[in-house]
Image (cartoon, rainbow, N blue to C red):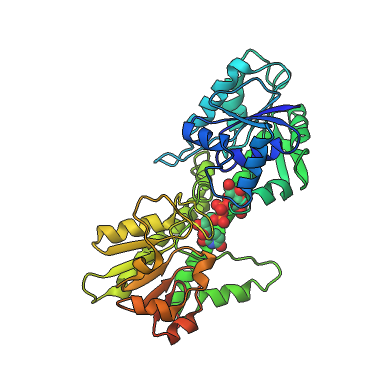
Amino acid sequence: MNKVCVLGLGYIGLPTASILATHGFKVVGVDVNEKVLAKIRQGEPHIREPGLKTLVEAAVKSGSLLVRSQPEPADVFIIAVPTPVTPDKKADLSFVKSAAESILPVLEAGNLVILESTCPPGTTKEFLAPILAQSGLEVGKELFVAYCPERVLPGKILKELIGNDRVIGGINRESAEKAKELYSAFVEGEIFLTDATTAEMVKLMENTYRDVNIALANEFALICEELGIDVWKAIELANRHPRVNIHKPGPGVGGHCIPIDPWFIAEKVPQIARLIKLSRQINDKQPYRVFDLVIQLTRGIPSPKIAILGVSYKGNVDDTRESPAKVLIQLLKEHEYTVTAHDPYVEEFEHELVGLEEALHNADCAVIMTDHDQYRYLDPEDLGKLMRTKQVLDTRRVLNAEAWRKAGFHVRILGNGEKA
Ligand code: SAJ
């Protein structure tokens, strides 16, 4: 195994291609987006991720990472393309299909094809393998096929690509063994072998566990508000139990994984996956809950202006996919609120982004939607002077509420029903 062709140079494909290229492999990265290719050719990643620029630069400069718009013959093909969810909550496998079809002309006996994209259980066996069989090669004997989910956390991708344990599901044992050989070149975590459908399910279970846990936290938040207590304190105390790990409530669940992956299980077994679907509904409702709180806080204020702080889906990343802030901004605009938005990480967004001071100028309520570290250290004295009404709604509990209250703010924290 010398040459690896990585299809899809996004959040997973690009870091994986660069790591392989700096671990002794000749790597050809393939993407359909010419702009992405042009940037990478200059050693510039098109996504922001700690450490990635240095790595891509090194990989490109050394000549070990080349980028192309079409696949080339290689020993291993890694498919890392997006698998979005359709409006009726089914996996859209069209990118997997076109990536698989694009390698048909260059596949050779002895090749290994690895799917990394998140997929409904059964995809590798029932969807990918039949496409690859069109090459004329016998899958499992002449052509090895495995599913190896990525499990890395945006913001820590490079560290986790190397350090995390990996699960590899082969279409047969030989396929899994071959894939293990590849990942062993850079993975320092343990590698576990299983069958392809189990590996697909493992990936979906990890993210579904998190979604259901967050839904429970969000439900606890509503209950605690009703009971006049603080959910954050209650969760902290409950989590002192050695076998309890309740996640955090918040304004909703975003990103390209957790709000989507549970649907890939539900589409296969809609009658059985009741808790999974209910949790999705609970989490999707959270931005509406935040909207209700904004209405309460601005009641009686003529033409209220709301400043949204943070539009990415979570702290310290620039990714706005499925971000709860999008839903909230849309709702506010539909109800004729004046809205300004600020985010220190995000460069491109569907609504205009402005500087922090401009966002807060004359605002009647600041809404913290993302737990960027920078927001923890905001100075309420300074910011209060900019605002028309000193109110802040903290949906992530990042502020020092006492300091803000001292500066004259009315502070509302999602999930805290205590009378301030
Ligand atoms: N969130 C909460 N409360 C919490 C934790 C998260 O409301 O207690 C929200 C976040 O603010 C965010 C969303 O959930 O909007 C998802 O964030 P995340 O940090 O939980 O997850 P992702 O989407 O950045 O990455 C997840 C990870 N999965 C797990 O931790 C099980 C990552 O390891 C996966 O590789 C990734 O999904 C993926 O690609 O599938």
